[in-house]
Image (cartoon, rainbow, N blue to C red):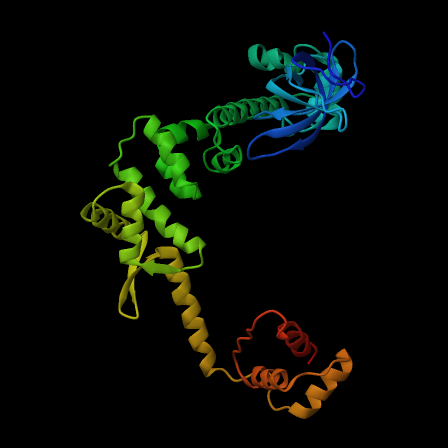
Length: 368
């Protein structure tokens, strides 16, 4: 079998290859795009292989089809990339050193590779008690190794599923933190609930759920869609948004009546998820957490009116001249006025466009 190497010249097309991953030079955690340094299993020549995989570690076996050879950059674009677990002592060491299985230290890695160079994973799967015959492995360490192996399998299954469904691979870390080995089960059973909890894109979750039998007017779908609309406005910088405009956008997204959406809003209010409050006479919708935070900020800001400035009396001309001499600058009249205001007030907001002197003003305040 031949693999394209850095010495191969184009044209070279549709070469199958099989080798071991020496190094993962690049991996995109969202779509699996990767650049791998691969050693051919027969010729032992090194090549750079690019393609997409849900998961890859040094030491794993990789195979696929090379489409072309980039002789300038020595990179071989590929398709049908596939990886399998290491099957040699050298590769097993690389795999374990990359912490594919958590909690196995350098000394134990060496012992395991020496003891099970070709059958380590079948031992874990079929005869785990053989681990107890390895020096340094008692029941606790055996359980730790098996736990790491089962976690790896579950993560691999989750990543492979996301990859096949063309969903972002970085969802896996979010799901794993919340659901662990039940991540895939939770995604199948309650996709909209998962989407709400992690603020995942509505369109992706909706497409996934509808393909698996959820109805267009299911409560779960409508609640997620309604919250998604309000969350979209929040991400644009709005703590709240007019109720009518939220309804308009939700109707467009979900293609349901205003009456049905009002039922959904009632559910969210009863569930203490969304608050309706008035801003200048207009009913606006808040997420409960955001509403609480805004009230807390307002309360703290109002409290400043009863506080005296921390500095006490000071000679403004003296401190302004001193700050300018220290920093070797000359403050404009408005900057001097702003500093005097800041030093005589319990709360000051400094604002202005680029280049208006905000940074210089703040440096002066800090110096004083």
